[in-house]
Amino acid sequence: TTVPESHSFEADVTKLLHLMVHSVYSDKDVFLRELISNAADACEKLRYEAISNPALLGDDLKARITLLIDAENRRLSVEDNGIGMSRDEMIEALGTIARSGTRAFMERIQEDKGAQLIGQFGVGFYSAFMVADRVDVVSHRAGSEEATLWSSDGKGSYTVTPIATDEAPLRGTRVILHLMEDAASYTERYRLERIVKEQSGHVPVPVFLVEKPGAEPQELADGAALWVKPRSEITPEEYTDFYRSVAGQFDEPALTVHFRAEGRHEYTALAFVPGSTPFDLFDPDRHGRMKLYVKRVFITDEAEILPRYLRFVRGLVDSADLPLNVSREMIQESPLLAAIKKGVTSRVLSELEKLAQNNAEAYIKVWETFGPVLKEGLYEDFERRQTLLGLARFKTTASGGAWRSLKDYIGSLKENQTAIYYVTGTDLARLEASPQLEGFRSRGIEVLLLPDPVDSFWVTAGVDFEGKPFKSVTQGAADLAQIPLIGAKEGSNATVTDSVSSFIQSVKATLGEAVADVRASERLTESAVCLVASETAMDRQLERLLARAGQ
Ligand code: ADP
Ligand code: MG
Image (cartoon, rainbow, N blue to C red; front, side, top):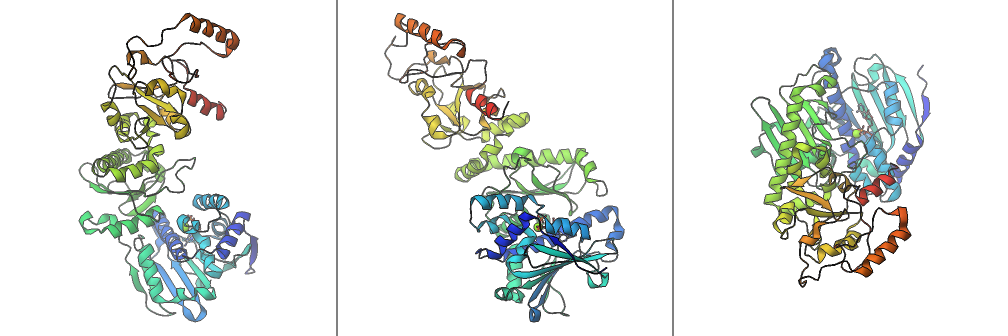
């Protein structure tokens, strides 16, 4: 029964592996970060399962990750005493592309041949093949009597073999890398020490190093939870390192929010606004990535702690009050969690407000990266709409490419102007050239330029700001007549002459049913005609979007 059983990789895995092996990506160190993060995930999964089934832990209670060097055989192993994998789990996890990050990576790489993306995406387990020409994975699922050896040279197939449990770690997984010749330096202690400190210093499980077979383990990282420490004791570098490991990002955070809520509910939140766009920002599922811990035990990253329009925020909440021994589903329903969600959401928004006040430049960068996502909140979160409108920034016909707030806009309303005017479309240059704007320009009325798809939705949600409704320039008879033209002489406003009337009659006759009406307009000063939607009908841009979506 110990005959190796051969399997082929899923086609996409083969493609990915080919890319790994032949990649010119120079920073191969990332493989270690990936393996350590998998080992830490496995330890956290076990801790969670052990809440309802303590027997899984046996008498090996303390989670740990160990790097084992065998320089003589040019081998490096990463071992954990986490949850482990059964044979079937190994086939599923290590033979297919299960994780969405890797999928997204594959899609991007096809457009854009740059192997540089490897570092940005963190391509998971398969990155081991950047440094190894054979990878063996020995795993023993917690609570099971069986152990399995998975082995591959990364060239299209792998084998799985049942093995005796005494050849496997007592519980958990050992990943053995048979290093390529030019990767031999990954058996040097100092090299590993440096990489772990740089990349994995804040994984929530301690990391040890065993310098040669039989040597004593030495601690490289203590696995202490950074968020438990007071803010004053954490350096900016520590925050950045932690952000990188929790967010899978490789830049600097644009905003760090760290606070402890006390009183009725006690919890700690540590959240980051990334400095650049995370790859999964526009995933159709729009899930958030905030992790939920209870008393430092990882529970789930599916608690949707923040609303979807804040899904770019990465980090965690650690609750002192939520019960540990209930299912994830029960936790979702808990009123305690609802209170946490509310508290964390308000805090993130108020920290964004503060940033906007204190460092406008940094805030604009955040808006440029995440504005289209934040704007989803304008129609999804009625309660916080005014806050979100306050955070919103717009390019306008008067801003010369700069960003303006609605406060700025309201501050320069024309006399008799009763609405906030906007024009929606798909690109700024086209919007700015729209003939619909002529009448507004010639009266010096500022118009918001709204180029994002999301804009067509929130503007129709009955939104107003400081008592002024939002109005499309393409909709109905804009109340322009009340506002004087710049430099216009008294009485020069369009009076509909007889010749215009008869022209309108003949246009109506020609177009027939295709239009609802043909009118003389205050809207235009240079162009002869433009199309508008009626006051009660859908905005033109929304009409186009819905038509495209087949509605
Ligand atoms: P991800 O970690 O994002 O899921 P990876 O490619 O890094 O993607 O890993 C794929 C899967 O392999 C993991 O989701 C997990 O199920 C399994 N796996 C990898 N390493 C381990 C490990 N040390 N212990 C248990 N399972 C593991
Ligand atoms: Mg992983």
